[in-house]
Image (cartoon, rainbow, N blue to C red):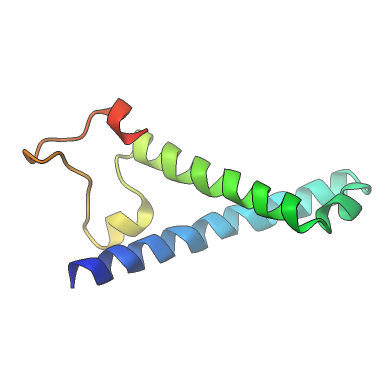
Length: 91
């Protein structure tokens, strides 16, 4: 059951980061018409999405200590001795 909760929490976080990704692509397309042709590149889209996901995971873990999916499923990252994990270990 624990692994199912972790998996579902991860999926929620991936979907939420996707909601951050779509408006960024729309904004870039409207501000720079040439971006539409760059956007057709699958490599560019994949790298941009990867940067957004990694940034979301790092920023949320550093600021809130947990991601939204973990908050919803009442999960958190702790050390083996049940103390809070230091910020440098999160990175």
